[in-house]
Image (cartoon, rainbow, N blue to C red; front, side, top):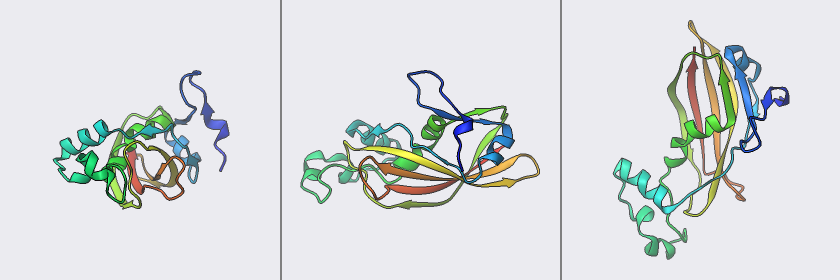
Length: 165
């Protein structure tokens, strides 16, 4: 499905976003693939901040020197870091209009497929896989794929379900 008619350019400094106008905007985009987002660079500070917030003390995230000698060659981000970036990256892709309420309902699956090394850049693409009618509003099933720039195998794939009313 082509989404070209729904694209807008906010200004020269912002990436193109897909305008989704009301619940019918989601219905019209069922099956559409959006993205990729602008890349995010993984820094050691980012990894440490995330690990601190979830009390993850595993050396693969903290010990830069030891990680250099590991099979990864660098520290790696915790697997849940990329799914945690979904809200930020989703709003890098879309400009929602005429929607009063949204609520993250959860995820049907999260698959962690390859490590995300410190210093790499990742992006997200999203597919609006299903638009489920509800008594009030809709539930939108979004398949998000997180990729390292220049790497074929995804870092992670996740399905998010968001309720829009």
